[in-house]
Image 1 (cartoon, helix red, strand yellow):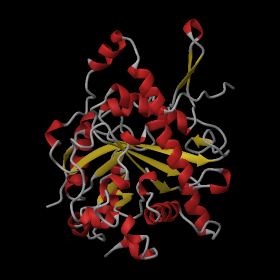
Image 2: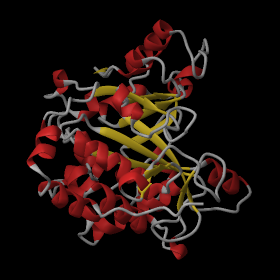
Image 3: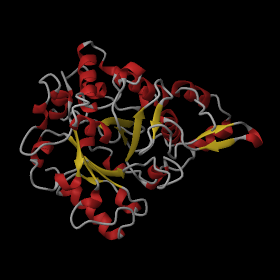
Image 4: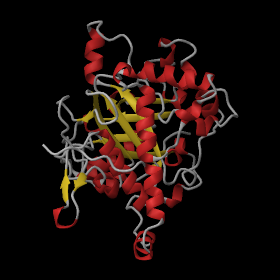
Length: 363
C-alpha cells in the first residue's frame, strides 16, 4: 500500500504559488469561474440564500474526485470521518470502514514520468483537495463542508476539537474559512446574539471561503443509545467554542457547532445554558423539516442556518441517485421554500440544475 504524502501547509503553498512562473500565474488568472457562480446574491446575507449540496461527496462511486461536485455547482460537501489512528494523518475518510481510507481524495507521489496519482487519502488529503480547488477558483461561492464524525472525537489520541481545528486551519488556511469569530467580531457576546442581529456577512464577503461544521456520527449515536458515549460531537464542540470564547481565543475555532431541531420550540434547552447561544446551525432530514412539528418561523425570525438532508426521502420519494431531473429540481425548490432550508442535500450527481442557488423561503 502506498504511503500518503502530506503536502506543505496552506500558507506555504500560497507563498509557493506567489513565486510561480508568469505563465502559471496567467493561467490561474484566466481560469474559468466555477459553474455555480451566483453574482445575483452578492448583496444578500448568507442566511437568506438557499443552496444545495452532496451527501457523502467523498464516495468514489459518485465521482473520481472530491471536488467534482463543486464543479457541478454543489455548495456543500459531506465527508465521513473516523478518529482512528491518532495524529494529523490518522483521520480515516470512509463510509463504513474505520480502518482504511476509501474515498476519492487524491494525492500524488513521484515526479516526471514516475508521477502517480493515488486515491484513498486521509482527511488531510481531502482538505488539500479542497484547498487546491479554492486556489484555482479564488472568487468561488461560499462552500459548506459537513464532517460527520462517525464515532466522535478522541482527545487522548490528539484527535480532539482543537486538533481538528488545527488540521483544517493548516490545510485550508484561516483566511479561507468563515469562522465563528468572524461573525462575533468583538461586537457580540455569542453567535446567537450575532445571528439575531443579522450579522451574517453577504455572499460577496464570503466568496472564496469555506464554512465547516461537525455533526454527531451514526456510530456515536448508537453508542449513546447503550450509554457507552455520553458526550456527543455536538456538545463537545460547543463546549470547545464556549471555552475558547471565554478565554478570548474564539478565533482558534474554525468550525460551527451544530445540533438537531426539535418539535415545538428551542431545541437547545437540552443543553447547559452556557452552550445554548453557540448553536445557530441546525441539521436534520428534509422530511422532518416538512413534517409540521417544527416551528419554521422561529428559525427564520432568529436568522439561523438550517440544513435539510435526504431530499429524496420527502414524500413522494424520488430515486436516491437517478431521479427525474424536473422532479428533483422541484423537490429542492419546495424544501428551500416550504421547508425554509438554507441548505438542501442529496446524492444526485446527474441533475446539475438541482444545485441552483435561490432565495431562501424566509419572509
